[in-house]
Image (cartoon, rainbow, N blue to C red; front, side, top):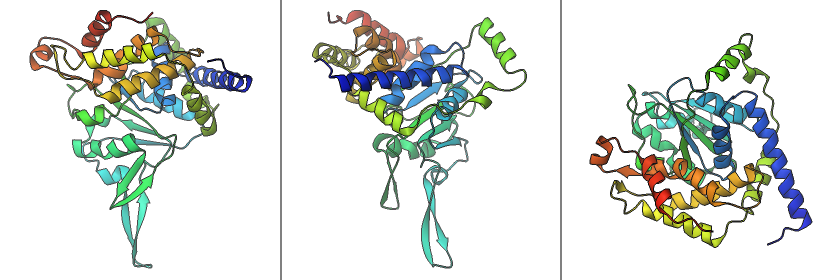
Length: 321
């Protein structure tokens, strides 16, 4: 399919906007190109992101940098063991003058939400985000409240073996389009960080370069990125292979394949391409699929990982030509 001139102009405009956004975030985040691109891919694909890493690797900074780079409403929730679902969703307050209850919206009613250290809250509180992430709405006392169409959750969590953490339930893990780590920066980049923050943090100088309308334009353009039937079948084979793998107790759901396709389309646009290639699918397969798997106890105790399972499946699956 050949693009018309207006469609091509729209594509180039979307690519330019993404470039401005990337450059803005890189002014704060150094040596995390893959993390920035993966975050933007999930964002423009309409998914949510879970950043898992040890403290101090820039998880919160990356999320705040994205929010600050877009002129959108931003809320942050610091998850703690005593946090309640009403602290996230909101609560009905009784007004003595009107003798009626009025709903006071919680921080979930925003455009970009940072759920910081999400696995430090109880499973009951974690689950309060399920409906919001899956359906872009919240149900309170039988009444439904729609969320913004650009609603995006960036959750951070410390490794599950850290003190005071609660593992996220499988249903909520499946709601995240991607989970990935940022890792430590190189010594040279860490030295640059010391120089950059000697007087003030670069984040303090960050200004918005996009508006919510720009985000909608980019998301519309993502849907037009071409992906062949052969590559769709390739995605289905990768996902289906997790369901009968000898080391996997619970394989990936169809949602994994849908998100892999959408994230691959978004990643292609982030890279300035007009179509999806097999290498983009392979690059995103682990961050999109691995966190949705549950391994057999023997494999888990033996040091096996979901990432290695996906890597093996990629190597064993024929790539379309």
